[in-house]
Image 1 (cartoon, rainbow, N blue to C red):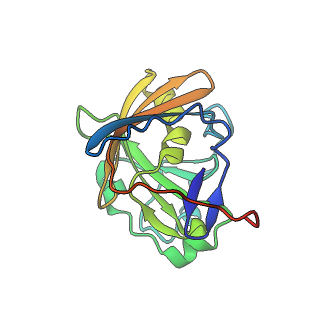
Image 2: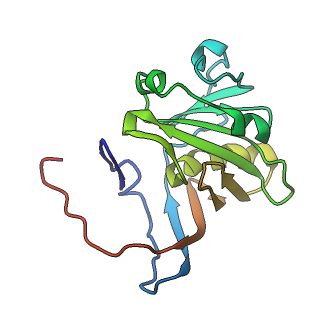
Length: 188
């Protein structure tokens, strides 16, 4: 389940195999397995026209559609430079927009950023559901199932991705900062 300022998205919740979260404070590992509505590289692609992304100042090499629109850019520098118009993004008929490119660092297979104006999030720091969509694309393109990715938001985060048939297993580290209970009204 993904909670955003504009509501919740259960698209990935029921298919998740589990979330591992130790009770101890401090750095810890996490992992989550998704059966995502992923970007299938064998599906017809969206033609990468400038008009699809006129509010970013960049020109994608490829465009795909999963839960989100995905734009593959030429390199990591192009991903870092994206400066979207969030008002225009909020009008798109998708939850969010992912920009991604092959990593420039030998330790990173790919990098990304996720903009979720429809979800009430200008830019998410680290987005598991985005990685579950783009990991299969990068696995096919790079010819390997185990990948290391970096989300290039202001806070950023490194995500390990393992593509297994129709599943994507994500992992990483986090620092617990809050314990509590969230109650969701039945009206949602």
